[in-house]
Image (cartoon, rainbow, N blue to C red):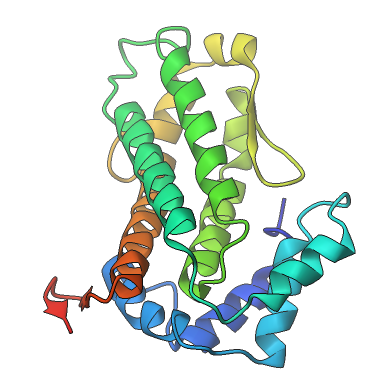
Length: 230
């Protein structure tokens, strides 16, 4: 799984150039900088090309639905969609944090199976909530999140978590229950783990959604220092 909805590394660079930044920006800074442009009626041939690739996430996606989605590019995302994404991203952040806090010298895969199921379900819901978004920053963060997931694919497979063709996750419960504690620890434990990187992207999605909601409702946004603007 080397790309997200058909957007590969070239499109990651494309989004970086469109946003005027790179993945080295903090989540607050990226939310602030890119959301300003997201809510303006910005539309170009390059943007259409990127969105077209994004919406072609599976072979079953039909051309009519793609065209309908592209026709709305440049528009602000609705409050309903943004609220749904904010909620889903917050739940993913919470689910991931719970796995990070476990002591893997004392727990087994069977002990945390429900937490793992919650993580997989929350990830899938958050990822699917980005599907029909127009926001540059949200699309970029979704791409980055799937890239982070892809970097851990080998270890995820060892514990029974697989990446599907549409970049969602599936969990083999029996395999997860038998997973080695060392593999679970490598994936989930602590602030520097794979799970912490997914949690960071989830927090970014929640923040970006909150910023967009504020803009939609006529309020300002928070800058990098946490100060309300406008």
